[in-house]
Length: 227
Image (cartoon, rainbow, N blue to C red; front, side, top):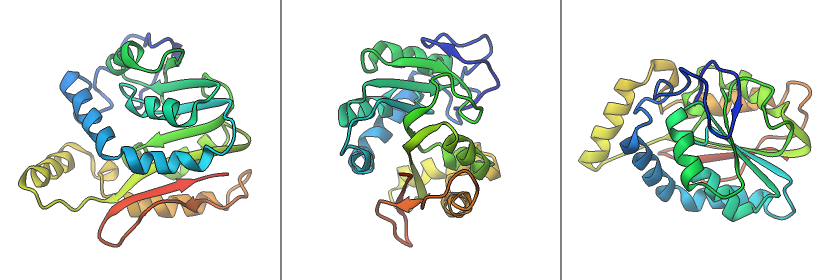
């Protein structure tokens, strides 16, 4: 999702950008299929989160860490923004997104932790399962808030904790933890929540960060939004 590179439009990433370096499971076809399954599992809570911003017209919506474009398609179908863009550092995933993503979408090879974004200020920024992989989520959130137009939305979706009992899912979680650095593992949900609270008090942002989705002590998905 992240790489050190200059933004390049239309999915043509600079040499050395992406190629799986930013994804624990790489960015090959099988990895894209895994993200598609993830999209299917979380489609309904994602739509509920996006529904927070669906009451009015959205000018520019930007999908941060868009991968092969599944979450970007959901943005398009749910919000129908006037303009839509996807940002990711993976050259391979951006090619897939261009081939199968929503028509008219602008795709950029860009490190989502680096600002300014090549799209310019957005009416809505969306990031699904991005913050939990970032070692300095508080800093990144503050940067993202600075890329919004006045009154814009920042919508994020991350897991607080995953409780798995099926042997295949238990093995998956063990493998995911072994492949991820300690500071970017999937159980960072509580840390991300604390970082969101700290962002509330930092200028120029003065509005509340709202928890919008289901959350339980035993697991689930935590939704946060900015209005």
